[in-house]
Length: 493
Image 1 (cartoon, rainbow, N blue to C red):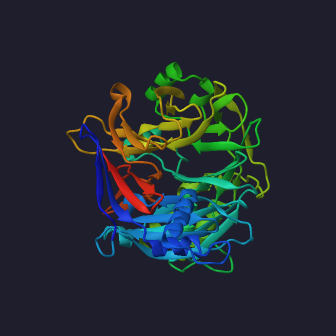
Image 2 (cartoon, one colour):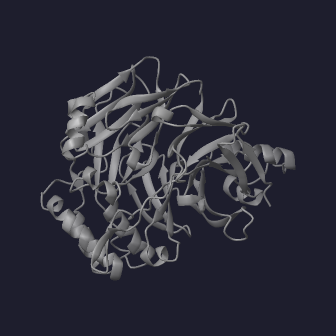
């Protein structure tokens, strides 16, 4: 049973509650045998040190609300259920997998993806998959039980980041273009990005999970490939933040405040952090569409013939929205194709500052938190493409986002920063409240993990009693801390 512990800020405005533990027995399954180099079994202390070192190198992801936690080390991954089996908060094993095709292939990116499932959603549950990116460039999707659902090598470079980008909820339809939908964005080490169409991926995985797919044909889905005008062989991170807003009044205000007029007309926008050169980060945008690989309508049509009920109605919705793209007759690129070239429209040059990581806020805020090599955290407004806040004294930090939905709280969204060198979690407000809200000392050896707010398929339109509605609404953003000793802690403010 995990040891309960609670860290509280001096002003009482934030707390970190340690209420979960990954048992040593599960760590042993993930990290391998407990023998030393000379073949002798390690004692308890040395074994704990070994697992602690392995945990620092492990990649972690969590599902919506933190019910599931995925861990990856070298070529193995593990899916755990947190605090649901016995109520004690300790993690229980769901599945363990190792699907590396080559001896030196390792997992370099991980995403714990919830999938909208109407029957389970009504019971307050849902399906979950593990999406793993590999050093070979492969993306593999596994079911909760560890079964391989699909594998695809979009690009022959290490896959370093996996993100799900969602369109805004129904209350903000003015920002959605006719063709905008959710997408899974895959960032590769050389800066190439692949955007997998969320609707076709959703239908493919739903069929795989229901065992309705034809094994001989395999699941198929539509994707686009992007390449950036970079003068560097590597990037630290890159994100897609979708098309420019289409609301006329908001667009007029944007023309006045945006640093580059090219961004205001863009159909695809990206923020890229190169590893080399004099640019800390750059904004890339294009008004041209990338060639779409695989016909979305042909794929969805094949799938729709095998599904019924809610999935069929969503598939038909997908047909109507995909027809124009399918009939354009665009060519299909191969996995080695360089991708559609996207120009840089603006860059922040402040050598030797380099952006190390990018944390996206929930979609409705259109913000990103960027950690850099000079110990700063920059908050960037993705609509104006301007730095709106600069947090200092945070060298070696990690960033995430958190929302507070309590009606009596003025501040709704926070930047959560774990300053690893000082062992402190700091919570910052934004805008007029852009100041340190709370500081909690938790010690060193933690990793900050951001949780998703929406499932794959959550933005699909479903019909209920003659009216249309979005399948799900976003949940408040949350984040947790994973300790190198296997402890898991929730952050609240």
